[in-house]
Image (tube, rainbow over all chains, first blue to last red):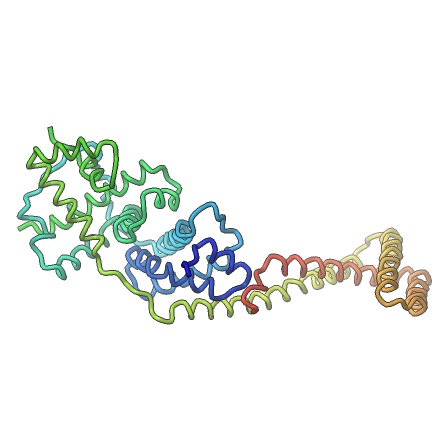
Length: 188
Length: 183
């Protein structure tokens, strides 16, 4: 028997079928938890916030427009709640937004400095996590959605209500800042 | 001339018009090839980043929390429905103690009560078919309201309260997703 689509599950859930909504939770829970955790960097809070995302989705299920994908809708809720949370927490990130890479001719780093190749995996991921923390929130969100959650540019553009060109630009900037942060750490 | 950083990422973004041109350049330019490889490694390492898995009871906990909130919302809706009663009572009290022209209000109230009684009477007639009982009941009420205009005001208030409460309660029931998960 073919697996039900998200839209079918939403329709069934709206009729009061508990299992259909549970199936939607199971389908998206890992993605949402990972996204929130990488954004707020606190596991307990991430779990609570992820729970809140699904509860909010349940109570707003009747407002879901089936013309759009459910994944975009649920990530939009997650993004809004996470940004609200971070705003309340007023985390202070250092300002590296001003660093511009636009139209800059590439710098070609010395391959010997590449931490991807030089560090052992565990150490590398620890550093990567630190570098992610150091990224300003607005950019971090884009790189998480694209490279960790592996959403498409179109999906991210829909979630963030931005033109696809802006999304691509933000992702490229975030990746470059991340790379620079890691290479700086690795420099002798 | 080397490629720009955006161009290198464009290559990682899947098929595009420029991809073929960039690929040709990369094959012939060592520096660009190296720069591309580094970026490819970074993006790949982000994708391989350790993923967190949800606890086994994550979905069960959410469903439990939803049930809890639904029950809370039910209680709130009942409280909200009783809110107009309090406000109406307060208004009546204020009208009574202020110098409001009670005669005018009483005349309007008497008309409203007569109309409401007619509607009430018709509904009960259809539903129960016990005309005599209704007639005598409405006669008693009419006697009360015509005998003393001071009685018209409180009866009018009761009708208003009941009307507002019912409307608000129906609105709340319609808006709150209380019927879900009752299976």
